[in-house]
Length: 155
Image (cartoon, rainbow, N blue to C red):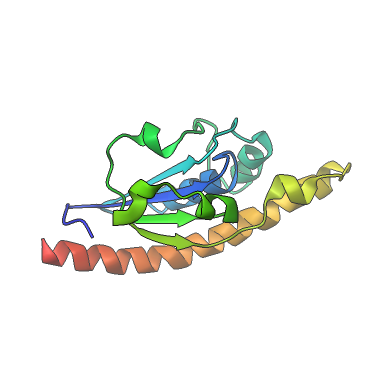
């Protein structure tokens, strides 16, 4: 665990286009003091426009986010890396060895929506995952606040 004045948390998925972006959006919305949230993907893809839309429904704007690799984040030392899909968990880059890596899987909205034609049915796939991530982030924030207090008290 780093002894810096803040914690760095990364949400990692394969494409960094949907789930990890939602997680970063929710986490940053909480504005937790001394905690920096990031997202990245092992194989970045274009930001998913439906993910952007469903996040706007809960008044969180991720439209300015961009998909990126962990390497694009520079030399940030991550205290926690949360993988939100199995593929990213398996491909988790070796440089996260000094980080606490935790896997918390979420369904893939594009995969869930595959073959659906009704716009509302498609949106509901994304909403379902968005809502699961939102609940998880709120619960996670309590753990991060506790960890942040512990790290700061050791500094």
